[in-house]
Image 1 (tube, rainbow, N blue to C red):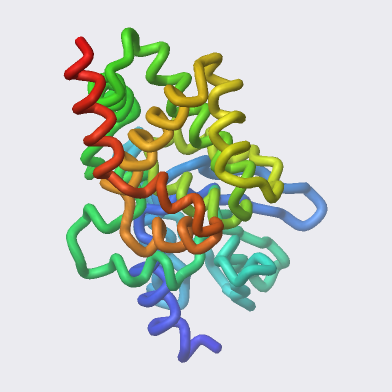
Image 2: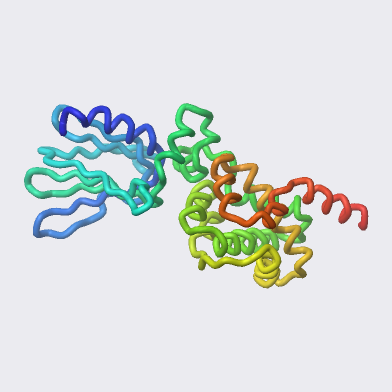
Length: 268
């Protein structure tokens, strides 16, 4: 109902600010087209009987779209309850849809609102120009901390660990974690074939992907996961740990990384 639009738009905009959206416009009898693609969402509001959609962080820096003669507004959600699209239908049958690139459960975004921007998902930070770490920085730090000889080896180690993790945890959890990481690295979590397997096979799969010994793969995995834990909100890593058997807890103990580093340094 129009009298409820203000509070709905206010909460919706507050929760989803910065999320990447595509604005699709469907005209009766003329098909649909993308008005804007993968632009950060700034907000939606009611303005003089029209719906005002604001997006930004591209050329031009920001823009506004207006939807007139609004008839209905529908929030479309996934089976898990994540907001997937906001559909606005005009009296003439035109439908304007705000499609989220990555549907995100509101309860995972909302706790971050009102806190430091570092609590926001990494890809939201990037869209808003606030990101504290890019792909290159993550790779460089991993190369140093895992004592790898090249950037290429570091990339392989990161991808091997994240791809194997995506094979073990539910897709929804993997996608939530992916959204917290720099964009290119996060893609490694999006194509998992979810299967139940133990910690030994977890390490063996990483070793096969890296083409290294299991002992080296185990160390690389701990370093990667230690770094991931440092850059994503605690509640997301809690969800990841909760999806894994107890034997996987050794992957989340930073002191094991430190001890392995100490022994490797002593052997040089």
